[in-house]
Length: 236
Image (cartoon, rainbow, N blue to C red; front, side, top):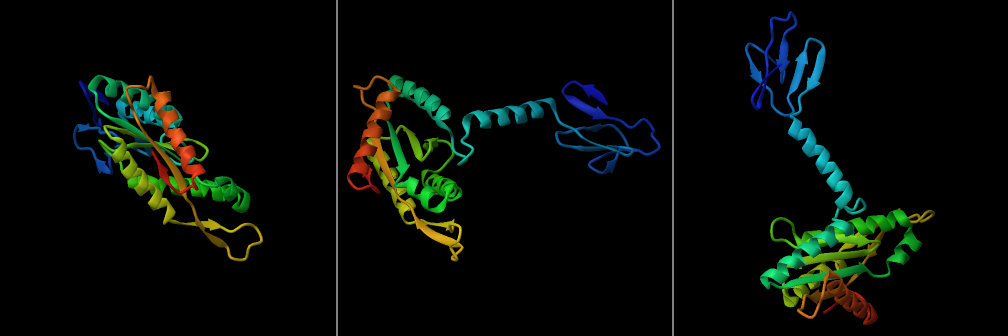
């Protein structure tokens, strides 16, 4: 093996069994690339670039720190850090900023009636349904789980009107979705069709607010209002 600048080259020096990269026998110097399979006689190796190993480790640590394992969404820590960063840009640039806070209606009864495994399934599937509405990629809102059955959507650049429209589409998508749950023990049906609803509170950043907690508190007040008015609705 020869390191030539940024390249790693493999040469066979006349071995009896030969040297192979990606199952091709070497007849001259061969540059190794990330993930290449290398066979030296009966020894099989896999080549990783140093940067690739570091990146994979960094990605794993990052996901452990920032992603909710129950739903695959961003977790509370990531949401809080992102919200603070976006609010700094909102203050500096004078752009709008809105959030949508929501939770699952009567979720405790799902756990009590069908068991915690069914409750976990409802959480994951609800997250997937809402995620499909919110979208992903550059410029898309940020969806995450605060904990339990509570979720949050961050919408930098969005007005109250835009956020309310998205919240209503989220509400409708969940309300019309059929959740298929395993039946409780002793139930001969095997599976149960379950309907789930969510209540949502929408708030927009205003100059009267001091920090992120003021914006989140405003959204939570609207969420409690939605609960008080009968659930399965958007309040802003």
